[in-house]
Length: 314
Image (cartoon, rainbow, N blue to C red; front, side):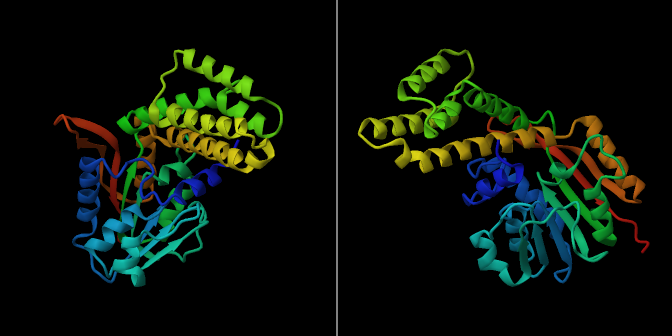
């Protein structure tokens, strides 16, 4: 199976700005903009902010519009690139740094006035969360006295996690030992055939597993494409690279979803998370579920919101 970090490299190289929220979720996007705008709207423009597990700069994109002269740094363990709007509006004040393990950063002590993260910090936390959690120790080390931090963290019972569990289950069936993607990979290495793949596909369609157009539909389209080209006379060797890339990206998506689900914090996990910051001397200002209104005018649970200020003592 694909390396966990590589899965994120492949995801961010698509140019996606969000890892969990689509750009079409307008109400969610509006809630996120309000969350981050409120955090920096009264901040000094000469202060510095570190965004952890920044991805392609989703949080920084919002912040640079509100405070274009705020010194912004985004770090991620994956390979990242600046979103066009970040480059256009605040490139001189924005630094994006790839291949950074947030459990061991090279910045000097008390470098930043503010630290943020949107659906990222939790991926670096082992459970049960304790005062020895390296990512949290780093936050305490890097934040200046009286500095503040705000995090939006995956909630184990959120609508996002529930929907992604369903997607992961669908991908798991396709990637199982006798799954369609497994046989596609075998075909690329000369260990399966068109006939076997067609039979595996029929068996999969007969399974009670929920199938969606976004996942199963696209996989079947890809498989049909390769079968069509092979039937037209192309060889497996000629198609091997394309098949391998298709399999790799499907494995990467499964890995990404699995990591997301594992990273999500239960109520007990989040209580431990808050306790660590209290032990560091932080004043916790908000530690609550973060809900957003949906199209039905009811609320969806999106994650945990955490806002805290560090003690003013150096």
